[in-house]
Length: 401
Figure 1: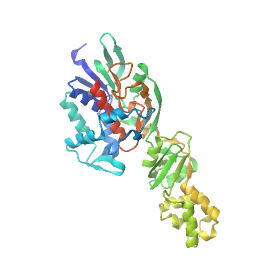
Figure 2: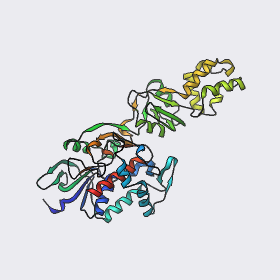
Figure 3: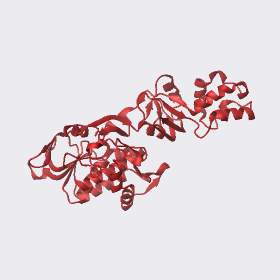
Figure 4: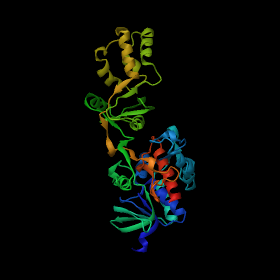
């Protein structure tokens, strides 16, 4: 075996978690080799946040993550915090701004974040290899090293960090499922993987409804029995999207009904009855246009009260107004599915964390093997939390590998 193919640490995956792990290991004087299957590093970083990269959040806690073990993320998040990453961004002179809910975005471009990580990797001598497809990985017990067969030859390393990501956005070229296969090969269990932080699709009349008002958005409160979010919802030609729906997709299960409050903060039934008493000649559509986009009101009218299109509130019975009010506050809608991995921001599910040390990211019964980032069954809310998990888990593995 040629000496240039031997190293201390092999990192599989050139995304956020992989670059962080490689840089951190390199800072410790380790000889690090990072292998990326696609033709470019950090593709997800580049396309995230509309090209501005929502790189972290001002308020990060374990409650922002979904995981079988609610405590699993705490150690990594404490070892490398959002403020640590913000400090790194500031050190590199990258201008950023806060949006809603503490989300931090680059002022200029997500390219700034990728350049920062690459500059740090180059500074500590990380060997970055693109278009490198791993065909086999084994543990050489005699040499106490991991041996990988690739299309660019055989490589070996004392430690192996798996940062291969999930299955989302396969068009980026890295969603090969390699990390999951390696996990199973080394005896780890997987939780079922699903597309998440993803738009939902509708069928039948509600898809036609949505298509008619595609592009319309409004603030709502959406929920399933386990969770709810007050955010904006967007109608699309295939169904519903926007931050509220993306957030809810982390908790929604196929076949489950979601509840949408179209006028959050208002008791619509009381609103309608009070207006009937004070201004009986007004029309329901007129009242609703103060709260909802007119095109949405028109479409709802066709479906919910077509027989009262020209009626005044005086002409409508109280129980009918109460029924309609309850529909506005508790619209029950059953999505037919999601848009899938094609547009999903993350993959829900993955490597079960009960086999991973939360303090080091090392596999408990497989020394020097680490799993980080999205390949693990840790899913953050929308708002920079999945990037923060990549930074934190990648750092922890890099410190220990």
